[in-house]
Structures are given as C-alpha cells and as structure tokens.
Image 1: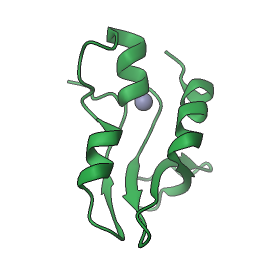
Image 2: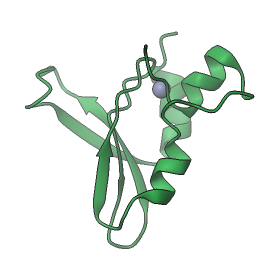
Image 3: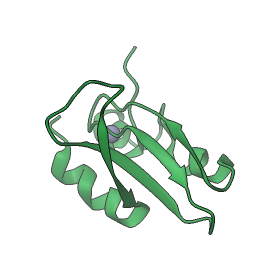
Length: 91
Ligand SMILES: [Zn+2]
C-alpha cells in the first residue's frame, strides 16, 4: 500500500485520517542531527530531518538521477514544505 504525507493524505482522503507519513509527528520524535527516510507516493517527499539546533527540514529528490542510492535531494524548511507540496503534487 502506498504511503502519503500530511498534505497528500489530506488532499486524497481528507483531514480526518492520520497521514501514513506524519511529517509533524516524525519530526517531533527525531533526535537532533538525524533524519528519517520516507517516500510519499504523492509528492515524492523522501526524508525528514532535524539539525543540531532542532530546526526541521524535509527533502525532495533533485536532478535527473533517480537511482535511490545516488539520489540527490534538496532540503526545505517545514514552511517551504507547505508551499512546495502544492506545486509538486500531481494528484
Ligand atoms: Zn506527499
């Protein structure tokens, strides 16, 4: 079964359901200076991270290389995530 992040889940199923990839819950539980790899089938969200200062970031694939090992990503803040998801979502 496909997993969806908060924005995609809300778009597809409404806000009553908890997202499979709950960015806000996951980011709260992250230790400082770590990240968790995820895969949203809707927008391509690929990781959620927290820096040493506790700032949350999300990563989206970048560039033409879709090899999962060599995949390049670009990190965005949670505020940017709200906007980017709308733009990238193709569902
Ligand atoms: Zn998504």
